[in-house]
Length: 174
Image (spheres, rainbow, N blue to C red):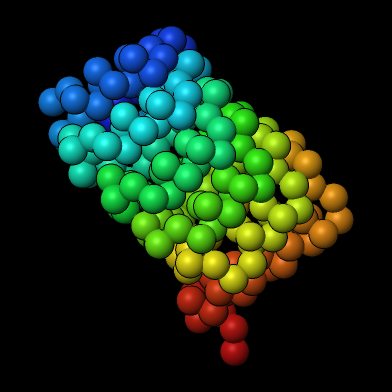
């Protein structure tokens, strides 16, 4: 599929991300997957600054070295305004990065965010699961983070509300 660019276990690093960000290959890409790409925050910045990613609706930056700074870059970049899926599985994101995503004015189209295997605690979970700017968000993944009862309860409440919205939308709540 020419709308998906998948770079699995290609250790491109930040320098490779900078080169990729300028590539005409990205102009029709809707889904970008960089799995184990050795990308850090500077690589995220290069992608965020790219003029070639205007069609992007899903980004998977799994198993990289992205910190809160990278999450903040994503949350504030117009390049990512059309994102519906943001997957930052197994990175180094804490409550601060989760809060930046939750409070983003740019990421208002997000339907799904995956932050499994990061370093997020209750505050980050509550930011994402509570009232936020992400009004379309339907799915939050936070497995294998640092949540205790308060964080898990916030996620559970979010999931219950999503189920109710889905039932209501299907006309099954009468």
